[in-house]
Amino acid sequence: MSFTYEFARPALTVDCVVFGIDEEELKIMLIQRGVAPFKGMWAIPGGFVRLDESLEDAARRELEEETGIREVFLEQLYTFGKIDRDPRTRVVSVAYYALTNLIGHHVDAASDASNAAWFALEDLPDLPFDHEKILDTAIERLRGKVRYQPIGFELLPDRFTLTQLQRVYEIVLDKEIDKRNFRKKILAMEILKDTGKVEKDVAHRAARLYRFDKRAYDRMVRQKFNFEI
Amino acid sequence: MSFTYEFARPALTVDCVVFGIDEEELKIMLIQRGVAPFKGMWAIPGGFVRLDESLEDAARRELEEETGIREVFLEQLYTFGKIDRDPRTRVVSVAYYALTNLIGHHVDAASDASNAAWFALEDLPDLPFDHEKILDTAIERLRGKVRYQPIGFELLPDRFTLTQLQRVYEIVLDKEIDKRNFRKKILAMEILKDTGKVEKDVAHRAARLYRFDKRAYDRMVRQKFNFEI
DNA sequence: CCAAAAGTGTTAAAACTACACCCATGA
DNA sequence: TCATGGGTGTAGTTTTAACACTTTTGG
Image (cartoon, rainbow over all chains, first blue to last red; front, top):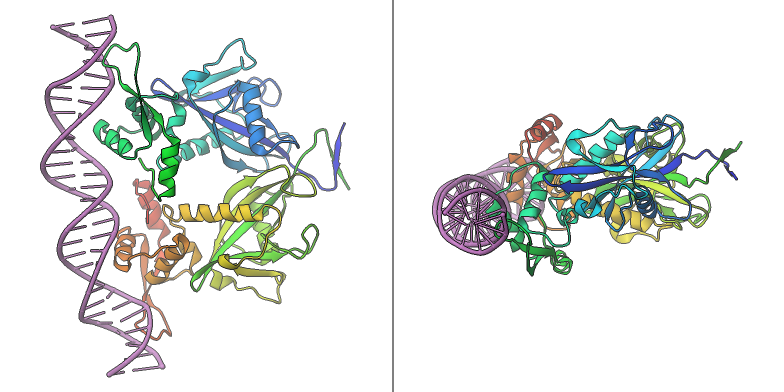
């Protein structure tokens, strides 16, 4: 089967930069390419857009097919369209970025996604195409956005401690934050809900667990409130 | 001539939201469609991406062809890819937005762009496709970006007064700003250069003319400086 | 000399920064 | 009882917001 058009069309793909925080560092998920070009290289997951799906649907489908990850925060990043970004032919790629709770998405070696793996940003392999540029753009966006939109939570489990949240900001922004000032600020926003529970199995005083209160946040946005770290 | 591919491909277009400030309001440039669908309706300028040009090149080319506007601030906005956004067939559109000195781009009725015109945002005709959504996205981006990136100048002539600049911010952000505080803040940034000239032909004390000092701005960005209004 | 916009400082309130110790828990 | 991180307040500094009058110019 083939498709014929009156004018030439670029191929259209989606790519998906997946972030996660593990211990003390920011990681991204890569997949090992099974086909040419760049067969065997680690790359950002992605693939061709089908005619019967929106761009975001395509990004989510590819993400699940290639890494098993689903139901995560996903946002369009930028569309990359330089003429020669793919050596084969003209390919335009709409890039997305995803934020995941890495702990909940450890790669299961037996799954479809057995050729997917997390990589620390400090320790990345060479990437094919313009994937390095896509990644840089994603990091820049994450750093910028995390300061004025409540997306830090997306990198944590549903329930988290204030220290975990602070760590997220310290890792993403790559700077130390004062504990007392951070707590004062984030609690003053009244967008966290104390779950009444505490950590389990820790060898020190157990910390309170909070949950992001989307309802409260939406209410504040309506009242012209500004989230800022 | 025709083009055949193994898999179906969406058509790819660029669209360009052009902003300008005239007197006391924000305007955008629309063109009257000469072809179906929606023939005769006013729409955001745009067109198909060719294989031998990047996305930004395509946006600039279409912009010049349809409106005569060239050499303006242009930035990618968002890519719109809902399945049914075009009634004919699947079309994905990479949207850009441009900021222009409207006074320098009054539409010349005798030009190629004779079917282009400026419209006040408050007084827009119905728009085809998802152009209203594209426009809303562009306005939101402009409002957000103007606060932390020095792009307000792009809506003014090369030389401008502080009052003109303040007006730009008041119009874009749709709120009044205190004159003394605005001047203090913007001058403290040291990104404006006093040209030594003053306004001509005004029926009151002539104001100083300033120019945006990109060199100084870049220097400050390197020093971790934050532009913010 | 009048109309119109240019230009200019001060003060109070709010936000931010820096900083150190006691507490609860499990091993 | 010790090691580990949890949790808390205050004071100095900076930033922001509110506010009104004099100056210059052309008509």
